[in-house]
Structure formats: C-alpha cells, structure tokens
Length: 297
Image (cartoon, rainbow, N blue to C red; front, side, top):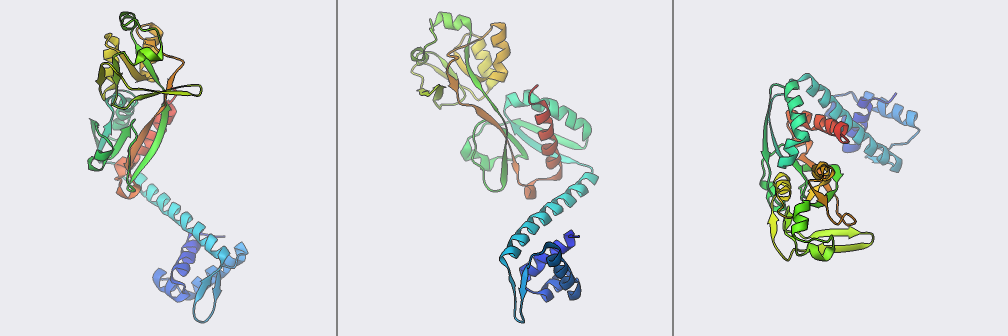
C-alpha cells in the first residue's frame, strides 16, 4: 500500500537524483529507500527511475507521478496543520473592512454568532472607502468588496455571489419630474450614483451608456443613496436586495424595468495562507459556510 512516507521518499530521490543523498536528507537507511521505490514501481506498474552508475534519470511517466505526489504531500501537510490548529484555542485580533451595508446585513449576524463561539477573538470592523490604487496600503485580515479590485500574488480573492441592481425612484419624484420611463429622459434626471462611472444599461442585444447631463449625487453608501431616493431626490442604482421590499410596498418604483444594469459581485479578499493568522483562517472558513447556508434567505 502506498503511504505518505513513500511519496516523500519518491520526491527526495527525484530532487537529489540520488538514493544516497535522499537517505542522508531524510535520515532513512539507503536500503529502505531502495526497497520503498522498488515496491512503488511494482505496485503502480510504472518505471519511475532509470539507474546507472553515474546518475538517476526520471522517466516521462515517472515525472507525471512525481508531480501528482507533490500535490498529495502538500494537501497532506495542510491537513496535518489544520488538525493541529483545531486543537488550539483561537485568540487574537481580526481586522475586517467591509461596505457599511454589508456590516449591517449578513456580516452583523455572523459576527454575533462567531464572537459567542470564540470569546478570545477580538473583532475590529471598519467601513472601507478605497480604489484599486489604495488596496496595497490597507491594513486588514479580511476585506469584503463590491467594486472590482486588483490584487497581488499574496492575496486571495473569492467571489461570494452576484446581485442585480435596479433603477428606482419614488412615485412623487417621477411625477414631479414628469418622467415617462424613457431612456432619453434618464439623461435629464438627478442620478444618485456609487461612483463617477457611467451606467451601462442592457436590453436584448442593445446597450446604452448613461452619462448624466444634469445633477448627480455620488456616494459610497448604499444606505445613504436609498434614503435620498426615498426623500424624492432622484433616481438611484441600488441592489435588488435593498429595494425590493420598498418596491413591493409602493414606496419606490423600478424605472426602465426592461433595461438591466450589469450584475455586481460580492468578493471576499484575504492574505494567502502563509500570511494569514490562525484566527483569521477560522473566521474565513466559518463565514464561507455561514454565507452559503444563508445565501437564499
């Protein structure tokens, strides 16, 4: 039976191209090295090494087997470290950056439960306002983002879910502005936007870019944008999850419903495993489970 020790021996022989050097590196008798490799070749039916008096060469099939064994060893080491981590008592600080609305919503519920389970972990949560050029200067363990970001090789970015935006306004604002639900009129409305980028609207095979000609209000807070739209200020672009209840109650109306904005993606960003502390890893792993379980609620 092939075990992890055999795979480690296989990789050592491949690395040093020498049974003697592998024996010295692993502190295992050379006879054991030879026997393990011979048994592996017999069990798999694959000739891995070609031996001669001067050096060891690796066969083509052997190279494939060695690459696969390396990934198995890596996974095994991660598993061993994870089981060791499970015996530890998580403690320390976790710095979280997230949009304010994400803090109020699902993150709020998760952190409440998480802190009860791990009373020795301190949470520091802040609202983030940044663009791509600033992310390298941010101090965080976990970052949630709705806008697209550029990350370096030391960060991991995972998509959580997509969400649809809607264009909404109050019936009073639409009546006062004499809005007839046409694309042409949209250019002349007060638009409440999350940034200075134009809105790209899609309908069937058509696409149109909306760059406001009149008044614009730019805010990074969806909550503020929602409140502005509820106070008859203008037409806002907001996530469906924030406005559907207001549309249902009649407080807001979806405008140009036959046109759609491009879906946005909620992302979670964190340092790669070699840079992530134990408490943060626990937080991330448990949050991903929690998020997936509550995604449709």
